[in-house]
Length: 88
Image 1 (cartoon, rainbow, N blue to C red):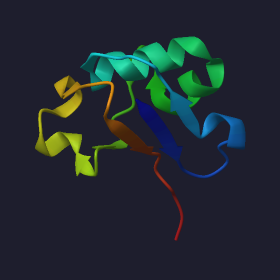
Image 2 (tube, rainbow, N blue to C red):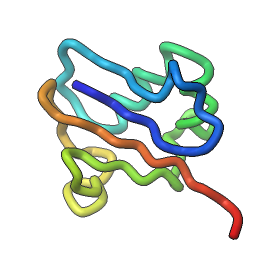
Image 3 (spheres, rainbow, N blue to C red):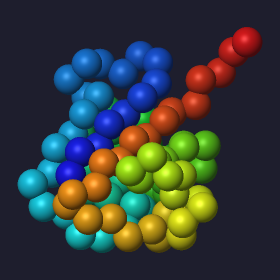
């Protein structure tokens, strides 16, 4: 599985995570990645919950149109996490 993070100020080495095997849902995946490094925790979590302002795509489809954070994902999926960009 490939997990790609998109947003401002993400260090290059943290923009992509590769997992050899993964079966579960989006919420569990984000918590798993956040436990690996404090950078991910700061970017993806708010206290102990997944940030509500993230846009999460699975193979190009927004997870909220599938089953939200409970959307099942598999090893062959590509997950894109878009962090909010504020300003105008």
